[in-house]
Amino acid sequence: RILCPSPKVATYDLQPEMSAFEIRDKIIPEIKKGDVDFICLNFANPDMVGHTGDMNAAIKACETVDECAKDVIT
Image (tube, rainbow, N blue to C red):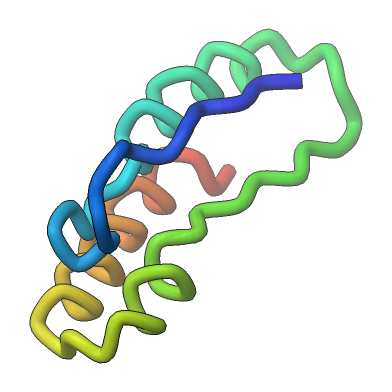
């Protein structure tokens, strides 16, 4: 199990990237090992940032997840 803590900010619109890049960087080696049949991965950025109501931050959150997802989807 791999857990990456969320950033310590008042609201996630202040850091819409959250921990997405850290998650990506930790999961890629696990994917490459090929030891497991199933991986459940949650990029929470769009959900958590979306709740702030800041559209620009929500867009940045989605762009970040798009960038990270392309690296982990096989």
